[in-house]
Image 1: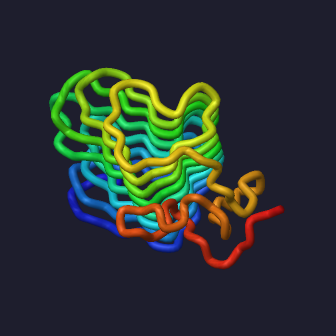
Image 2: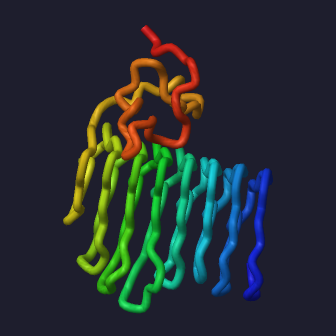
Length: 219
């Protein structure tokens, strides 16, 4: 995406690309109710800000979503699953002008990191709210550097290969328990009847991208 005009993508499917969507201009773009899969990067925000709502990014070879230091993103009700290395990668520095927010989303089964933040300096923030970060290969939320304020609130961070958190991260009202998905192995990360993620959000609703809709917990 080039140029300064805004655009909206709705109900699209993108696959087998170097970048599912690449944003390279100081503009505000929106993608919603869409799927990006089997690409190098699912979403790459090099510049400007991106709003993503109700998207699924899976099976990408580098990262589900990459937000560069000159960009920012707000992701809501989104699933980032089974990507190589990163579910969400965020870089920030002294010139960064936008926060990145992950809200009411699910980040599951990425090969190394659920959320990875690289920051050498700066005063912007990365916020994780009302979300589930589960079963990533190494870390749930990983901080490299000291510049960015990272907060994780009302979220479930559980089941990672090395540790749930690494680095200085502000945590509040979180839990760490099996989310009890319908069938994570087949990509269905909707929570079931006995999930601890029910009624755990900042508004007493369900956390994660896919709330309970009637599926019984297996067993």
